[in-house]
Image (cartoon, rainbow, N blue to C red; front, side, top):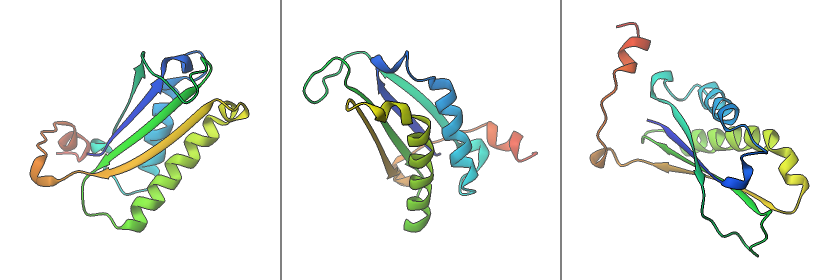
Length: 128
């Protein structure tokens, strides 16, 4: 953990480089110093079917969900959320020049009792 998922409306394909956005989110999350490199995963999912607000075809959304393990303070979570939201907002600034774009971010803690993981990346990055 953590897992960062980006869900976006298909009409953003021509406007946003999702690979670049994923790389930006990864750099920003790692830049907080709160997460181990081998644990962070960022991915984007295109929504083909969607209905937004008043159904204008130019309406678009990008929703970010950040699932993290327990143990970080409320301040650390807030700081991480603000860093990511600020970086992504800046990257997507041109989309806010129109009244047709919505951006959101939610951070959720994963219940360790209900989560199973196996990771071969950690040992490699830890030098083991």
